[in-house]
Each structure stands twice: as C-alpha cells, then as structure tokens.
Image 1: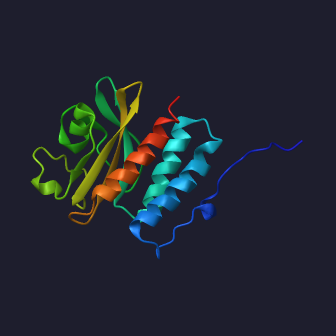
Image 2: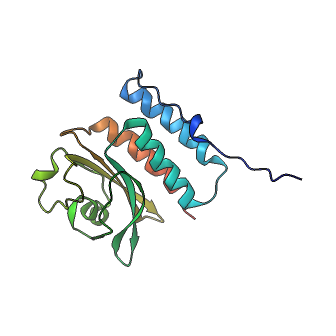
Length: 169
C-alpha cells in the first residue's frame, strides 16, 4: 500500500502581485493555515512559513532566531547568510527578545547597536514568537528599502507569528 501523505508543493503557493498589500497578507495567511494544518513538525512549519513570506513579498531576508541559553541562535531563513548568534538586548532582534515586543526600524543605520548581518538591509521588523508566556524565538524580516514596514506589516506578521506559536512542540 503506498504511503499516504498530505503535502503542499511550491506550485500551490499563490502570489498575486496585482493585490494590494493587505489582500496579499490575507491570502498568505489563508495559505499558511492550510500549509501547516496537518503538519506537526515545528521546524518544517517554521521553514515553510518563512519561505512563503519571502516568496510572497520578496523581502531581502526572512528568518527566525531561537532562544537558546538566553541568546538567539539562527534557525531557518531565506536570503543572504546571516549572523549566527545574537545576545539578548543586542541589535533589533536581541531587543525584541528582551522586551517581548515587536520592533519596526525604518532605517537600520540609525538604530543604536544595530547588528549589520547584511549591508543590503535598510529597514527591519522583528516579532517575538512566544511559548508559555516566554519568548521562544523571533521572526526577523529585513528589506532593502528604507521605511518599508508599517502598522499593516506589524498586524499581519504578528498574526503569522501567532500561527507559528501554535505549531511549537
């Protein structure tokens, strides 16, 4: 008897560049809910969510850093190579981890203590991913454009982070 699997292939990700940003996020969220519905492996779900975000919006870099021994350690990502470890309270990711709060940076060169993993990054948003009321990881999204992220990105990326939280095992 052949193995029965429920899987989502890359061709199934719909990226409609004729949609406005909010509708693109809504479409992405529906697809991520479907993509992760029957998969219980956290790492597989995180990796697919990151790839889908990157493909949907063509951001410079999308990835997660996991909290390990009170520092952030690089997890699945899409984009240029990245910093491997970030101390709590250091850079945008480390401060988001420390404060358990989403941070939007319009110009990373003006952010005190910014850690430049790529000189191509111009703006950034970092969203905590929590488990049992503690930061478990952070979702980090970088753009090659200044002032790229706004309240709408915050709203929908936080919803994606919440979806990812439900997949922590």
